[in-house]
Image 1 (tube, rainbow, N blue to C red):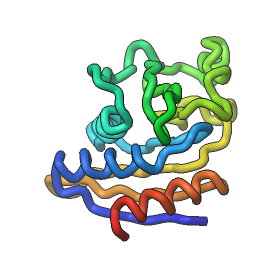
Image 2 (image 1 turned 120 degrees about the horizontal axis):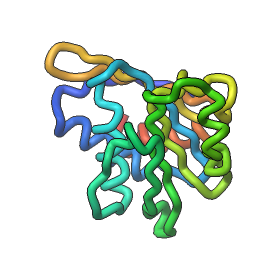
Image 3 (image 1 turned 90 degrees about the vertical axis):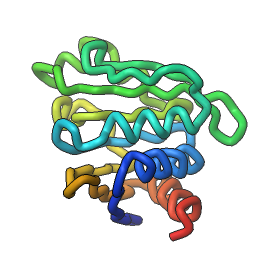
Length: 161
């Protein structure tokens, strides 16, 4: 499967990657974001959603667990849901909240802290691992499905890699 790594020197690099990722999105994607607190998961998601056409504020769903947005993908409106599962006490809480209903062919799901719902989350199309590196961030992206591979191919084109 497709993968790549890059170093994000600063916030401008994170915004640029988020913009490129926004241009590579497709309905039905499930993107898992891994990384310690402060690794840049929410910053990358914010940049991606804003570049995909969300004009308002992108909140971290740390307390709400999920925030829905409408973005533009290929000129069409698509629902995107940003999950932050950091505060989940168990995977069953994810099921009890009815969050699996958001996953489907017409929705993009971006999940921070997916390990908190391990075993009940649908399989990811893309996993991104972010880590602090000096003043910047390292990011490693891996496609785990055909749709994920297609997305990372588009992302590499958008980044001129």
